[in-house]
Structure formats: C-alpha cells, structure tokens
Image 1: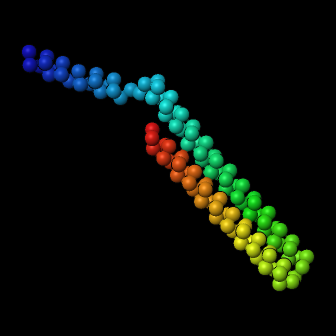
Image 2 (image 1 turned 90 degrees about the vertical axis):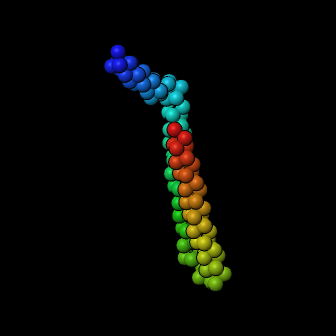
Image 3 (image 1 turned 180 degrees about the vertical axis):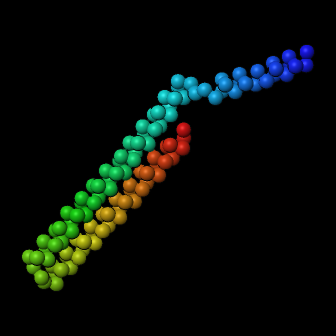
Length: 111
C-alpha cells in the first residue's frame, strides 16, 4: 500500500513538471517575435555603423579635396573642421549602434 502511494505521488509530480515545462504555441510565438525584433535591431545597428562610416569617409574626402585645391590657412582650418565633423559622425554612429545592440540584448533577455 505504501509503495502504491509513493509511486502515485512521484507520478503526479512528474506529470506536473512535464506539463509546465512545455511551451505553449503562444509562448513559442512570443519568443519568435522577440527574436525577430532583436535581429532587426542588430541589423539596424549594423546599418547605422555603415551609414556613419560612409558619411565620415565622404567628409574626409572633401577635406582632402579642400587641401589639394588651396593651401591657405583658412582652407586648412576648414579642412580640419571637416575632418573633426567626420570623427564626430563616426563616434555618434558608433554610439547609436551600441544603443541598438543593447536594446537587442534586452529584447532577447525578455524570452
């Protein structure tokens, strides 16, 4: 009699664990949605980096062109300012991309 009640107790415990460990279809859909959102955020971060890099490269080319055309102090100062703006563009792009990646990580942690 004692063995039967222990077996029943363990059986009930195993069944309750089995039912609670299975994800429902809604839970799976929610997790897939979160994963998709995180992937989109990471893709946006990559694109932000590329765009910032392209804009900075263009500004540096413009600064180089300014220097080739004219070697006056005012032109040199303008070229330096353009290069500073390129550096700021890179830095801002990197910061924004990092924010997007942090948001993607936070989204994945919600799963």
